[in-house]
Length: 101
Image 1 (tube, rainbow, N blue to C red):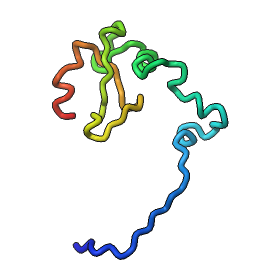
Image 2 (cartoon, one colour):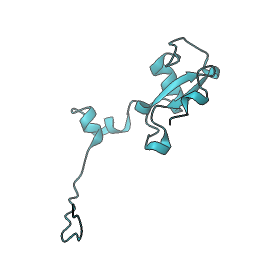
Image 3 (cartoon, one colour):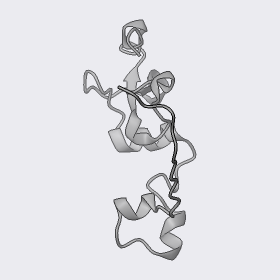
Image 4 (cartoon, helix red, strand yellow):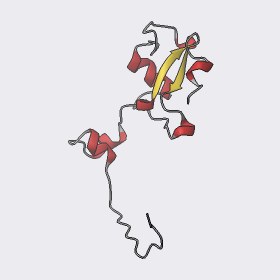
């Protein structure tokens, strides 16, 4: 296969509304009040979303025993967005969770 030399490059720039994809009816002030609105930290949001439950064993734990865990690790392109985060208890948040990620 021959890919070089590149003789033409076209870059198209256009506005893109990620929030509109999630909520087609979003307007004005609603952009300021996303799903984490009213929570001090991502962990506080996850505690409410997951009802203090460990993602592996499904049991409830006190907040002090739960850790925020990335499903796709940051080094592999994962984000700090809530959709990429779960809660794991101190018991389940261990090296085995990080061997492949």
